[in-house]
Amino acid sequence: MQLLNPDIIRNLSDIELLARLLVQGAYAHMHRCKDYGYSVEFVDHREYVPGDEPRRIDWKMLARTERWYVKRFEMESNMDVVSVVDTSASMGYRPDDDKRMSKLDYARYLAAALAYMVNKQNDAPGFISFATQIRDYFPPKQGQRHLFSILARLASLEAAEATDLGSVLQRLSLRLKRRGLVVLFSDFYGDPEAITDGFKQVAARGHELLVFHLVDTDERDFPFRQLTSFRDLETGTQLLNDPLLGRRVYQRRFNQFQEDIREGANAAGGDYRFITTADPIEHVLRDYLLYRRQQNR
Image (cartoon, rainbow, N blue to C red; front, side, top):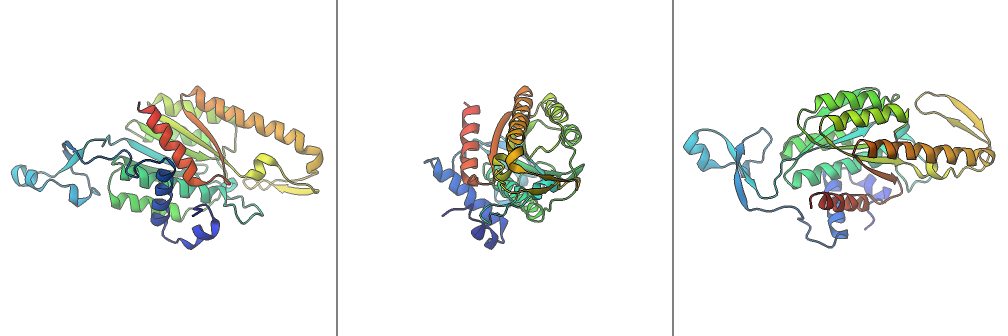
């Protein structure tokens, strides 16, 4: 089953189901138990937080202390994992190929699968969307209700406005109070120097940074052949260009831009992944799982 098939995705109105299928696909590609990272061995207690699953409440402890506690299990690190999704207009680019999604659709499905996986492994998923400013903020929290709130918002995201990622990263680094993993999904349309400064702000607050540089294959390969009018989705500026004459210059500049973002992420101690909307999402998740396993050794 090709989960990236747009016909299948469009017919799955339940984003929670899609996230679950994608995560299962990622686990399957690892040839390991699908419940990787999860154990039911009891370790200790922590105070109850609204949204925690009722089945994890220790009712005997409540009877003894008249205070609400939930049981913690081995492998429950309660790490904060915040998905940060770019919803600026450039993320809404739709290619002529119906087999590819927009960058925003790809990012929100990947973020949904990541949130589902994080919650399944007893960590705390969070979610932020942005354009010129932070649009949505769901602080990291455990529990099914919180997860469903994130998934519902991801399902309704739309691409609009310009972007100011450097400024947004500075703001979110101050808003996230506890150290955790910040996972950024963006095409990084903007000034690489300002974006790099934003990466450093996040790292300076003690957060781990995972960067998914997401582009459409049209942006990477520049497959246009005829005289074409190109329009900037964020500014509306139009440019009439002969792609055959401009391809070499474009690809040189694109490669340099990609390298600038990669170096900026690495300079901040982050992990950089370049992906396109043609990459199967479950493969991207598999690589993420392998990365986390390696990091935790």
